[in-house]
Length: 253
Image (cartoon, rainbow, N blue to C red; front, side):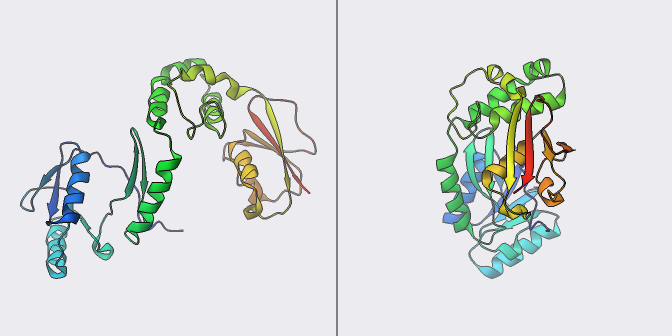
């Protein structure tokens, strides 16, 4: 499926962004741009991005045409068909940013989703991200093998894991949670249907996090494709000997 647009995060600190218009819509965009550190300028300045918040349709269309002729990427407020880029609804857990966009189709829907996510994501999420960043060197020393390191981090960040990102983080030393990520763990998935859309949420999570999949010959490839590309696939009638990480045994009912 083709993406309607490509989400990107742009560093605007100290960079000029053109803003045209007055009123509530323009004020809201100005606050957002200044919050990102942008220098808000007029049309006569050089800039790579512009926001057009003009109420008059004809004036807005003309301004967009002038700016595009200069090679400037334009956001036209409330005019999705004129936009080269859109500004998402944002959940800020700095340095973690969650952006929700609808390609300009429904700002109300994006705002509603942002409100839901605000309730879901704990305020401490940014602290967790910073702690993981600070532990990079120690993680490389503790887990020199990249796959072991990835498995340990994934296990700690999994639902109900020691560092579950949806749970409050009190600023603990993340390294003391990581060794459990390599402990052998076996889980079994019994399929009621060959259709991957019929997987339960728990089954889908197990497949997505598995280090290896042990499956019988009747498990369809569409199910196995739900596992990570680097997960080992083992065609066997019974579980293999315990190995580090997560082994998921998949059987048809």
